[in-house]
Image 1: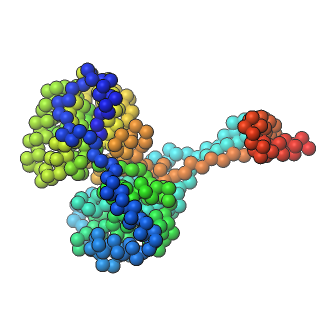
Image 2: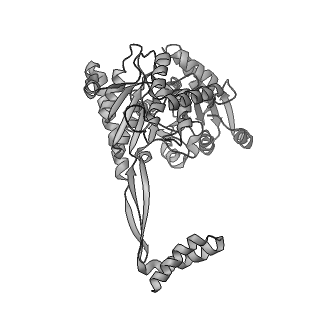
Image 3: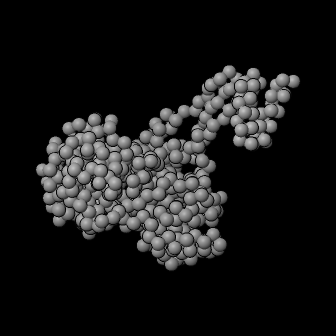
Amino acid sequence: MNLSPRFTTAFAKRFTLLKAPAVDAPPAQRDPEVIATVSRMLSDIERHGLDAIRRYASSLDGQSDGAVELDAAEVARSGDRLPKDLREAIELGAERTQRFAALQREHLTDFEEEIAPGLVVGQRYVPVGSVGAYLPAGRFPLTASAFMTVGVAKAAGVPTVIGCTPPQPDGRANDAVTYAAHLSGIDHLFVVGGVQALAAMAFGLLGHPPVDMIVGAGNAYVAEAKRQLFGTVAIDLLAGPSEVAVIADDTADAEAVAADLLGQAEHGPTSPAALVTTSERLGRDVIAAVERQLLTLSTRDICGPAWRDYGSVILVGNREDAVAAMDELAPEHLEVHTGEDDWYHDTLRNYGSLFLGHWSTVAYSDKGMAGTNHTLPTAGGAKHSAGLSVSRYLKPLTYQRVSREATPLLAEAVEVISASEGMAAHQATATLRLRTYAG
């Protein structure tokens, strides 16, 4: 999440870096060693099936019995082992995420229209048949991921959703992740992690046919496995390290801005965080606040390197330049802390999800409380793509119905175009219908 050389050259006089990243490049999205390792593993699993899955489960996860499916009763009981407040928070997040997804689904409507006499066209939304969801539970178990992947797929009407989650040190699934999957409507949940989990779902090695689509976040190996499996199955998106950016003016609270930058830097030591501000005073206050807050954060060994190596503070002269810089960064998560939040909302174009005002923070979405999806494009992907939503699980299928009366207008034009292209068989399909019509 850096300003491109093209942008910095064109806008050189319109911004100043109050803090530049220590690393003069975005985090590597494609590590050759990761690519080679994933390629070997996928080939091995495709060739040797479940035996290879068990081998990797043993060597990588320390799991002796391979991909274990949790029975439905065990999945349902996972909430009983959670503290009451955590259980209630998970229930709230699941409900809100599914409610937002249901609203999205309600606004994706089938239609049919006669666009010319006798020519009826239409579209209907049909869910994909099956989805495989990867539910991370590594350094930080991402409890809300099940809301965003399993729950939203179910809101879209996907008949079968299976999931995989890596084992904890004791060999069991994480109870919070399992309960979130249960509330989200998971059909089958397996304790298996990493590349082998994605391959098992894609190749149909878990007692179920190969899934049509794989979704969910993960480490570099999981992301690379999704990239290499794309085509064999559909995927949600290719995501790199989590990103956050903030637009703020002199009305913003420096402590809140600093806290929110560190909140996403906590995802990993290569997670970029950027502030674009029209106020030099605020920019310098935020830099100082970040350093001060790091002193007491228990995860400073993660947040600190991320801020040092990939953090930036960009000073611009006006709101138009702030938008230009932010649309160039195209961040995964974008917060706006200004006296003109509505103007920014109407003007900004490139972001994964937008958080407006002091009272909005990315963590509310990350943990499922806002209802919106946190599976979002990174590394500039927001310039051309949106995040995961209910629409991603739906196929907009088109159809047409042509009457006899509409035939001359369509067929004669198709004859002309086909003849000009030299496509005689195409032309013949139209000519045949014209002859039938005339007869």
